[in-house]
Length: 314
Image (cartoon, rainbow, N blue to C red; front, top):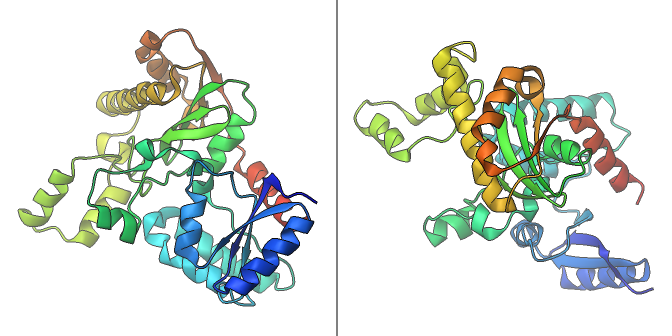
């Protein structure tokens, strides 16, 4: 059977002979197998926007242990990028494994939807070593929520404003993410409930050098004491103005990535329930031309279920 390039299996195995064997077996079953000797090489394949999307990943025994501890440890190593969500998720995984030791447990990653973002949108203008050795790039988050919205809107050029406790704005072209406001961590982008969103790094250096704040204090303040919490919330005139201005600014930026906008969609607790926010953002961006405005409830659970089913039925 000729390998189908639309069915791509990523094999992570440090043994060349094993990779050749699995490639041959996969080809007979109609799978195109791409081999990677380690996690770093696999990451390059997963972020290669010119290659086909990976439909499944097969991990060598050395990566996850028999009880999945290898995967858990890798997730734990990345927890600092999104501590508000990753650490509770890890506790949930451990609890679920203890309660259901005899069933498969699957981790679905929010950033996977954004692997199609091109280099021009995902690359920071920082030293090469930071990018290549330390993986500093724009990964994006809220992918599950955005994918669930994009699934239910027939628009070629779609901007999704997922506004809840966290907030992001994403450009979706023909169902694929091409830019988003969150970057290396969920701190980047528009203001959120307690997160600052993007700020001048120079302000951080000033607070470290001149005001004596520690890195831990800055981390806590930017994650838990900033955003709308620092501006009096959406019912405060300044808080409302700053929030809707930044979101509208992000929407206009996404129009660049898309070459225009057909539909502006809102999801999340704020996006779905605050008409005044939607109206303010839409009004500020009307200069972009005619577009429809939609309100769509995010269904991350449906996207997770789809990925889990696709993995388990192979």
